[in-house]
Length: 463
Image (cartoon, rainbow, N blue to C red; front, side, top):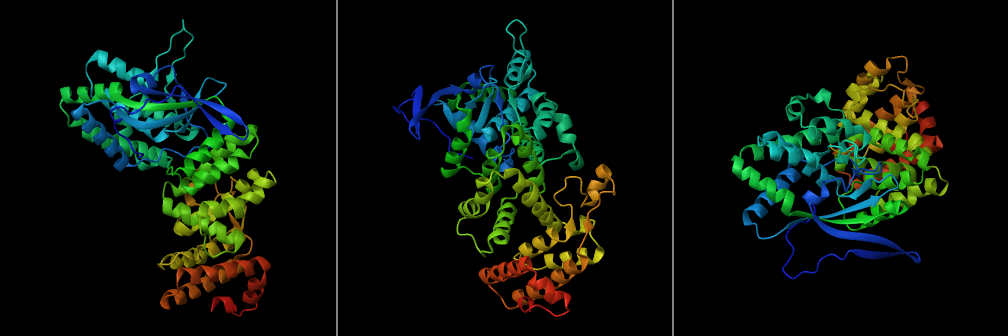
């Protein structure tokens, strides 16, 4: 969670307007301090842009937020600052949240919990107003939620959190939850509920009053919608906790025509959803993609190297859609097959080879396995292709993935099993293992390894 706290005595207040220089012109930005009672109002219609990451806080961050506000409430020696919100006020009158989604969602969860635990009609009415705009026909205000999440999670968040159906939320089974963000919403709601439910009524009401009236945001707003991605880049340079996927998604999606941008932002999220918010796995996946694309064993700086050496060639040609369709999707599916081979619809002997490879402590065989899966399976770039057993209920088996070069797939995986075992036994370093992997991928691209294997002789690279 970003740094929060009270302002030092005598510290200057945020100016009403500041200017940001940008290639010869000035982008005007308004900035002001506001309590939550002035944030969750009809003055703002918060929406999460499609290029943003999903809700990714876990119970540790939620617990810290609740405890921090509880401590500040107990001291009650001034306002408590939750950092800044960076917003883009667009032509529809919506405020796109560039920085602050995690806190806005978590605060909405707290309001919903306080509402569920409150019996005073006046307080429940106030709490409902923080979650939902009641609407006013005379003033032309429609009834709608204060905060709209990305399309995948919007309905879930509205039904269970903003409309206050927490009992149903807690009763949901794993099969009822479809994204990692929804799992985080359920888990964090349960975590905060357990804390707040233990409070006495008066204590909890005091907490609610402090939360609404004394917890503050610095709200930074611009109406320059075209500058949203530049602001996003600046945020990341300043150390925002973004995954490589978040950064690469923003770069690729920004290169796509506005008409297709939202659809492909959602498609990116669908492709990456099986990895959840496992930062280590996401980073390894893109490092492996970098190795496959550049044949370079190690990245000095993943984000900078991948942007310069992999994405730039697609961005320069305006081929963001092609990258998502032809590279990201096939390799992400191959990565998922590697992690869950037993759930795939591949031949049993291929599944057994992958299960055996997963028994090794080293994962530096992944790039080679991903390459050969992508080049041996048909239709991985087609959203209708069925790769896993769980997909058959929706798509049937008529679109089941087909193997077009089964012998090469088996031979490469079997050779990969031998060399991985030998490397582990001999204590080879990560650099040595990944150098070998990059050499194998280079030769696979040239067809040299295929020729050697098909002649029934082990390649010198794999012994």
